[in-house]
Image 1: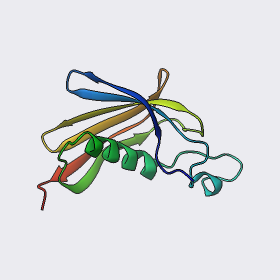
Image 2: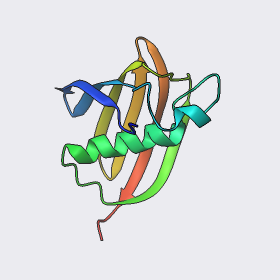
Image 3: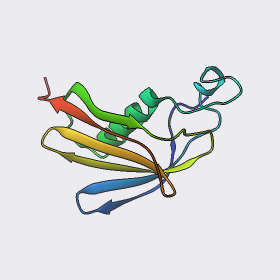
Amino acid sequence: MAMQPEVLGQRREGDDLVLRLRVPAELECFPGHFPGRPILPGVLQVHWAIAQARAVAWALGEFQTLEQLKFNALIEPGAELELRLCWGDGVLRFSYTQGTTRCSAGRVRFGEAQ
């Protein structure tokens, strides 16, 4: 079973990295989150944002805190999303949108790498 999104494409927009993602219907978390109406857990959305930032070689350092985390809309299996990442001043900003709907957004603060 999958635990990662399917990356459909990526582009740069100024300092931002924008990825097009598909949420695999066979994610390991879906059977238990929630039975009858599977949705993508928020913790996995944060994990994916950090993992994608690290995959493009951004040296994030050590995790410190989550800030301004908001979940506005449910993300279901098979959804195609846009993940926007911006890295600077020790903060990773991320947002997920589906079409014109913002699904979630937040900031992850990192400290010096140890």
